[in-house]
Length: 376
Image 1 (spheres, rainbow, N blue to C red):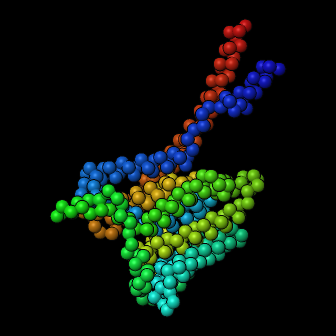
Image 2: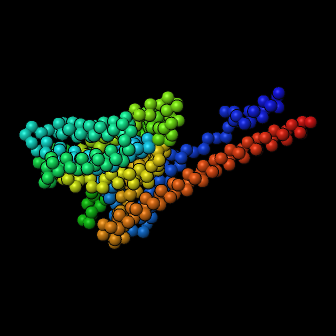
Image 3: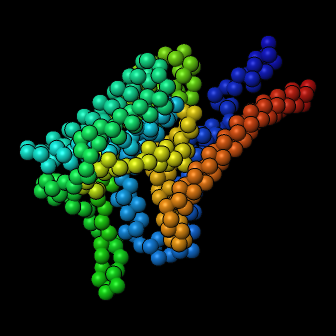
């Protein structure tokens, strides 16, 4: 009986005998993304120098793309739950145009425009989330319709570009935060302090908030479970439909915030605002380690995905390839590289994990049988 119990213990992997837990797929892909960005930026500083050595150019990656970071966070949440949302760019355009028209109208105020932005984003998120989660319509179809709808509504609000003239809003738009002790020297030798826009702080706060939600809340764990295997999640008692519904609401809310951040940066409404932003957000999420199949992803990786995407564009321009199609080509190649890299690493990891488990059991059985023979 003792012999049978000992063998059973080996195969049932007692907690105290289990090997150290390996790094998760999310953490592994996050490490790869951060490492790739650091290597790429350091090489750019060494090879091209110039603007890459300027701290303000580095901060401008955040200043110019704070809205993209925010909508990428929303897309990461949706993609972890195995969904997709390609309406975020159109939502941003609709919000910028609506807010500018509201601000320039009689009685327009900053608080009212913020409420309007959040209201539009939440409304779109609720409608799309309901259609996807409770009517089981394909997410791509629903959000494709949402993209056409929002772009069309933007033109209905105003077919001509609008620039905000509201004095209170312009004062807020022109406000920037000086980073103490950091800056660069101009040609005349004067010190120019580095500046960041308020939208950057909003984007970073959202990144940290989403990171905390994904890591420490039940909703975050449910997102990974639903994205990994929705049937298993359902058997575990997770409300799959409600989890997906709230993921789209969160994405809509972030689209509303991103629209206002975009407006704070440009101060103008235009039907072509945030053009192709949805594709850039998806690309950033994938480069950051989020899988289109769901269940794996990190919002910190998405942040570095945005930075990697924009850094490679700066490298292309610094190389003298200023035509826009070169940026599209390099973005496509970069995306393919990361998808291929993720697929190979996850396949090898899965295969290695099975073998390690088998070898560990064989090793334990061999030690047990050897100890039994020596005792005899």
